[in-house]
Image (cartoon, rainbow, N blue to C red; front, side, top):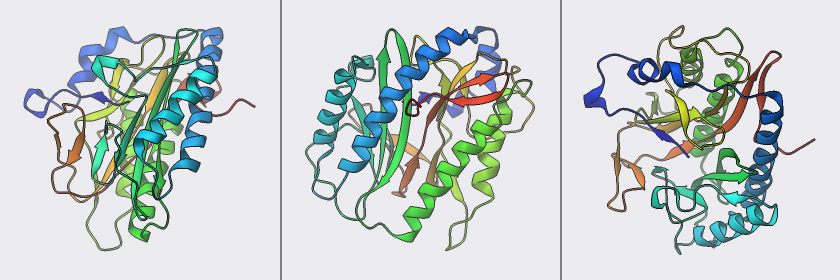
Length: 279
C-alpha cells in the first residue's frame, strides 16, 4: 500500500519528505530480515493465486475473499484490512484507478488492467507487494504500460545498494520510465503524490520514496534498511484525485495506470527482494 507524499502546495524543494525524516530510518538485523522474508513469501504466494483468479467475470470482492483466506491460511493477518479504516485485504485498482481501489461486485472485463496491492503481517512483521495483471487479452498499449512500470521498479531495486543515496532509487525509477515512450508519442506519467516507504513492524515507516528526482540526495542507504519500492505509471497525464470514499485514487484525465511493488532489504551483498516465494 502506497505512502502519500507531502501535497504539492507544501513542497518547498524537490525532496522535503526526505529531509524531514532523515533521522528516523530503521535498520533491521539479519534475523529480523528473515522474518520479513517469511511475511513477504505469504504475500507472494497470495498474489500468485490472485493473478490466476483475475479473469473476465471475476469480481474484485471475490479476489479479496481469496486473498484473505490465503493470508490467514498461512498463519498471517491481512495488513490492509482495518488500516485507517480500509475495508478490505487487498487494494484492487482497475484501469484508471491508480491505487487504493476498494473491492466490490463489479465483474472484471476482458481487456481490463488491474493492479492488486497486498500486505500481510506474520509474527509482527510486514510484507507489502503489488502487481498489475492483464485481464484476458489486453491491448499492446496496456501490456507495454505494465512492462515499463515493472521494469522501473526493478531499476529502483537495483539502485538500492549500500553507500547509495535514497534518491538514487527515485532517479533510477524515473530514468527507466523516461527511457521508454508510448507508441503514439509523448511520455508516460509518473504519479507524484504517492510513493514507496520504509517497512518493518509497521507497514509504513520512514523514509518516503519518491519515484522521480535528482540522484545523490537524502540519507545514505545502509545494510539493514528495508524499503517498499513502488512506482505508479499512467498513460497520459499523472494528475490524480481521490473519490468520495476517501480511498480510491483515479487519474484526472481518465488514463489507465499500472502499479508494481516489492519489499526489499539493503544488504552488504546488494538488494534482496523480500516479497517472493521462499526457496
